[in-house]
Image 1 (spheres, rainbow, N blue to C red):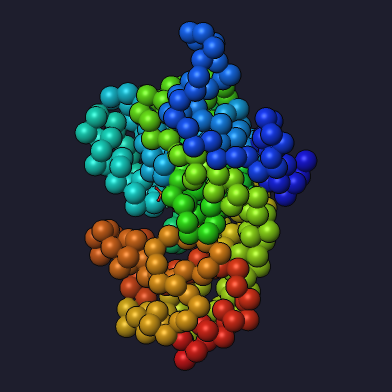
Image 2: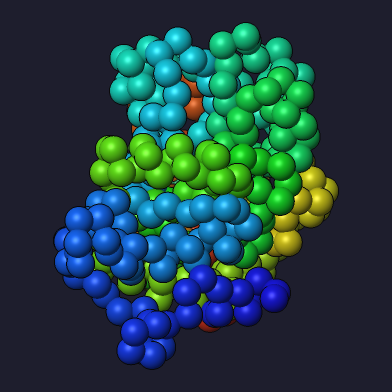
Length: 377
Ligand SMILES: *Cc1c(COP(=O)(O)O)cnc(C)c1O
């Protein structure tokens, strides 16, 4: 089955009890037992719920892993993964991971004795050099936000294998439609399903897939022990949203490519960052490990004042954090998602005051171009 077909027919197709084509919302907390311990596979909905189970089976199949898990947010998903580790363990973490990832590692798990070093994961020597005897995992994203830096998943998986550590990949930006880290050697993949997987700005959720059954077993233990699960309503919404992931991602990408090319031909834009452009440093690499370039673009309009002007004038781009929805979203990372990073560090990274990020939606691209044109003029 190819990915577009798998997105429609993967996992548990419909309801075995009634024949309902859509998996029903099992709004239930507990299940009747025939005798003590004799049940139909469900005992209590923290441990397992049929709607969530359908979603978990589905994402495991889509990402090509042994077992999937659904959580109340991307951060709950990551926190559960991090709870696999012990006091004194050490992680190598990408130096420009999602802000919430950085926050939970440095301000929550650090208090429980989990240590971390931050390195540029596109620099393989730096990653290798950062691995210590206590290192248990490499945690990375590719491409990153908002500079869309690309890291080599297969090469990092090889390093991880050689050193006996896990490779954990946040696949939120590419989605399983374009990129499957487990096939490239990663051990755990996770998503903020709030973004492209849900795709309609209506649900906050996180998904995790383990490559092998043993890690799957450990993750299920921690998921059930901590309890940060996704409810049945939201599990159903995600199942519904993901059916159209294929056609949405094709449209997001087509629009992003057109918009990036149009922006790169303008003399009043300082820099356009999109992995689909031939001058992007990760352009070759991303084509080796992914089937597409995604729907996120960043560009520098020159100054904070001009960025303000553009954001005030656009009509079809909603000023908001988040990404990956059908509607185009626009933001200024330096003053929004990355405001907590000190100014000098932002400058070092290249997150300038005039940098604008667009999560390109699936509107008619001609309208998106005309709107941006009037806002830039
Ligand atoms: C949004 C996001 C997260 C966090 O997910 P939530 O669903 O908001 O908890 C993690 N990683 C990336 C790359 C994200 O964009």
